[in-house]
Image (spheres, rainbow, N blue to C red):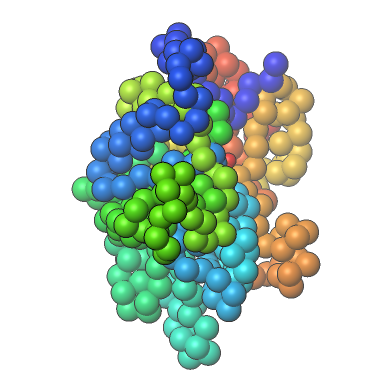
Length: 386
Ligand SMILES: *Cc1c(COP(=O)(O)O)cnc(C)c1O
């Protein structure tokens, strides 16, 4: 099997936890999902957590809870997985993209400010901005938060990559500088539940809205009913919700995974430090982590200084894949996807993101990578760049 760019780490403790749920009374809507929600909220220091069946669903719930709808604009980074933008389209809103910073590759605060200034004069300010902590490196949240106060938009952090990351004296997910933050528990991410996501917030009302919409928009709570109860069976559907629930097996896996989160991150940082050392002399731009941040290193992305290389980005990709190293590209600008082009987006919108995409290569990084496989990656890459 090729060396993947990322994969899960599962041990006997994880397996036992899932098997125990299979033998229990509840496979869904039992006690484990609330325990998982409390554990994640406790870990990051947020007041509320609402788990779901994917980060994509959680992003959709977050947009709905903030009232994103037709006529609204939502801005995100072009350099992200499509789900960061699709969530706004699900709500009937329009999406736009803010170009990235050439060093961090996260949404550029300078570009954001410029775009806000321009949008203000045209009266088309965004309802929400979705910064994405690409690779697990936190965005400049303090600055983005200050801009949200100045221009009146809400913030959803797409922290799918950034479980366990730190920003200044906060943990990503504590929502110090945002309304809602989203984690993903897909198997390539930092910890996994198989499929799964969670929305964190300090706002009780937003949490309750997401909880209702996650489960059909249905409530049984006496104090929430619109009509008087007709009996003990009575429930009301008050909004058009979905079935976005996480199941008990997933939450059980998440709980045992969470216990290993810090050791996973230590290991990822250790691998990143080794790459930094072994690749330092090559014509590459390596990841930079400012001293006020701790990256969770979901990805280790190198940028080719193609002007100094005899082979192209594509040739190097093909050589590495040929050598059974499943390198990847995270990401081509979302607006260059065929679906987004049909919405009217054109090349040239975010030059920095476009330049990044033709130079970026994600190298394998995951806790269980063997020393042999790691050395193989470095050695093949050196050959490709020679
Ligand atoms: C993985 C990912 C998502 C979607 O996560 P799922 O849990 O697979 O739905 C959203 N945004 C980013 C940036 C991601 O990497």
